[in-house]
Image 1 (cartoon, rainbow, N blue to C red):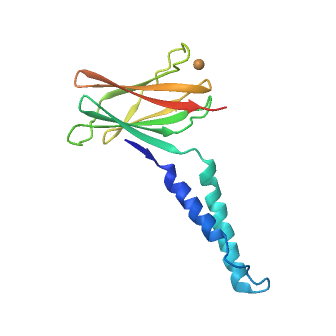
Image 2 (image 1 turned 90 degrees about the vertical axis):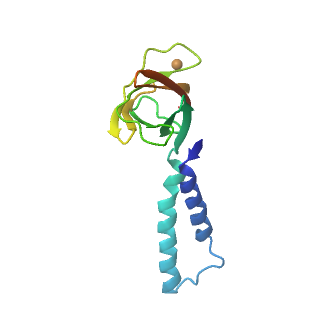
Image 3 (image 1 turned 45 degrees about the horizontal axis):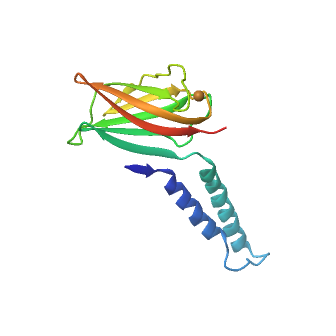
Length: 163
Ligand SMILES: [Cu+2]
């Protein structure tokens, strides 16, 4: 499953663009259209950052009956602490609490040093790392390792770090 949370923002932007295109020019000295224009400008200004911000991708994999959700920005920033989220639920859709969860961040193109940030349980089957660091541009493999009830499961997701 793949959701693009940023799609909403993009849709918002297109709607703003449509609204921002007046069907006819407002009369220059009329107060009403002027206020309307200001409102539209404000709307446009509010919408512009949506196209610049990096979208958050939410993906899911089912491994051995355990649904592993991964949530992180589409293009992690180079050499900056990044937030990565994991959501765990069982076959009945119930949150899986108190699992041991860590990430194993590697690059397929070359051997990298060990980079295994450990996630903290936030409650309700949600786990978080706040300080993952991607120290090179390019394609990364993000393994999520989950240990729960004596069983280890892994899921792999990918992200690309741009310059
Ligand atoms: Cu590398």
